[in-house]
Amino acid sequence: MNHTITLKQIIQTIHADLIGKDSHRGITLTYGWFANQLGHFALGFIPIALLHVFGFNLTNSLIIVAGFWLTFEIYNAMSPLYKKEYKGNGSFKPHWSNLIFDTFTDLCFFWAGSLTYYFCVDTDASPIWIWLFFGGLVALFFAIRYWFLTKLYQQNAFFPYQFRLSQWNGYIRQQDIEIIKSFLTKKESNRHFLVFGAKKSGKTTLTVGIANEMSIRHTRSLYTTYSKWISLLEDSDDELNRGNRSLWSWLSTDFLLIDDINPGVPVSSNKYTALETIEYINSSLYGSRNISTLISKNVAWVVGECEKNESVSDWIEMLKKMGVAEEMITVVNLNRN
Image 1 (cartoon, one colour):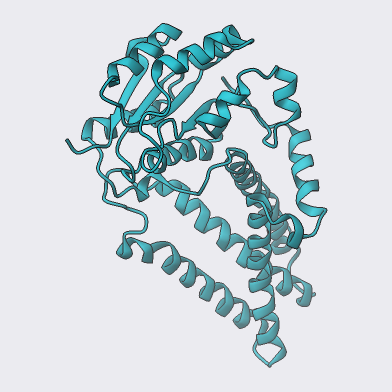
Image 2 (tube, helix red, strand yellow):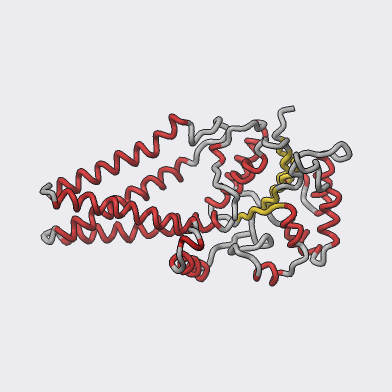
C-alpha cells in the first residue's frame, strides 16, 4: 500500500491547529513543531536586535548570534551520545541522517531569524545577498514540508508515547534484531510480528518503536488495543471513517499495532486465545473484508504470554489459516529463557 496524505487533509490539520484555545484542546505534534520553530526564529531575531541596540556592530552581532546557535546545536546533538540517550544498549543504531537533518533545520530557523533582522536594518545590503536569502527561505520550505508530514504521520498513529528503536535497552535476540532491521530497510509488506514476553519485558515499547520508525518514513501506522480493535470488526467502512479521529482507519493503515492481547498480571493471563481471535474475525459481519485487509498489511500482534493449553504455534497457525504466508510470520520472544 502506498497511501499518502492529501493536500485537503494537510489544510484541515493546519486549520485545526490554528483555530481553538490550547488550554481547552491541548496541542498536537504538528502545532508543537511549528511553535518550536517559531521560537527558534525569534531566538535568532531578538538577540541580534538587542546586541545592535546596545551598540554592537550589525555584522558582528550577526556573527556572534549565528556562531552561538551553531555551537549550541552541535552540543545539543552530540551531548546525548555521552549519556547514551540515542544508543540504548546498542541493539539498533540511531537514524543519524534524521538527527542531522533535524539539527540543520533548527539551525536554519535560528539563522533565518538573525538574517531577517540584518536585512531589515541594513538598507545598503547587496541585492544579490538579499536574493540568496530569499532563495534560502524557499529551500527551507522543503524542510518544513518534510517535518510537518513526519509529525502528521506520527500523531495520527495514536502512539501511547514517542519512542525510537535506538533507545531500546531491553533483552532481544540477535536474530530478531536482524529481522526488524531488514524489515525497516527493505520496507517489506504483509509481514506479521507475533510478540511474546512477560509483563514489563518491553513488548509494547519495542512494537511502538518499530511502528514509529515506519511513521518517520512516512508510512501510515496505527496503534490500538485488542479490545478496541475487536469492537471495530463489525463496523462498515463508512462507520469507521465517520467515527475515526485519525486521518486513517485500521483498514487503510499500512502498519497495524494490536496491543494488550494478553495484558498479564493483574489481569488473568491469556485473556484472548488464537482460536477466539480467528472466530471473532470470521464471525463478524465483514469477516472476509477483515481477513483480506489483515493479510495485505504489516501487523504487530502483541500477544504477551501463552497459557498451558496454548502455545506459540497456535498463533502461527491462526495467521496461516487467515492466509498469511509462513515466511511472512516473525515470532519475537522477549523472554530470556
